[in-house]
Length: 251
Image (cartoon, rainbow, N blue to C red; front, side, top):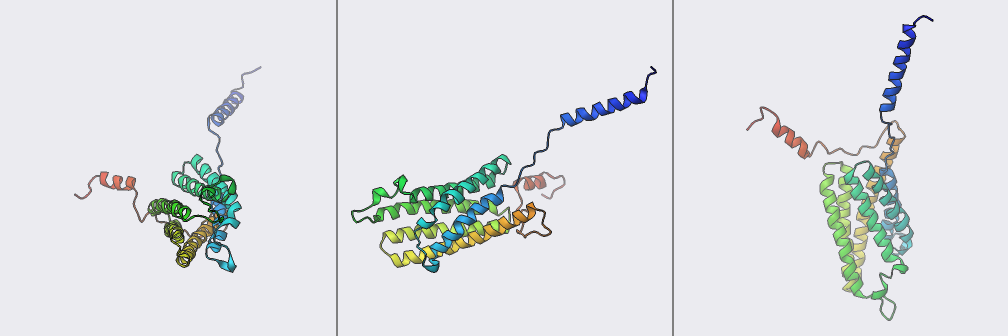
């Protein structure tokens, strides 16, 4: 049988293609977990903000919303944050997981089985003022954390800046509502709750906008919602270093 050079060349080319395909790592198609986390946030915070503002005579204590605290705000936010971790998005991971932890903690506080309120119950089955004085610090320092997120968000987009700014306002108002309730000033406490609820409603509106924008992008919709990119407004540290290291820069 005569030697077939063309046949051997084809076999060699096919072998090279197979070897290259085997050496090339498989592409990982990861979904965007942000809309999932934001869906958990809006399903929890939107009704809670309406309750805090007392719409339709709603009770402002949050007990009616406690299931959402656990399974929407807590579970979905924490799950979204965990998935952001695997994508290498540190800021999104910390934000979603931290607020997920907040809603889980709030849900545990309102769940009788955790006995968070039991030690503060008086003989007449009402909460002692000490509970409100103590719980207010939790709201206060979540507000401090929100301020840190606000500063970091200045390099992201306008939607997130407004979201964290509203959270930074909401939590101190809720803390003040707890403390004024402990002091017996129920009228002022109610007004502070309404103010905190209004700020939370702004957070909800921004979250709805970001979630819808992410979902539209995920299905390749013909238009997207503008987020207001700020990454070029505040230069990053690496960009500043590149400018300083550039040859011929002005002294």
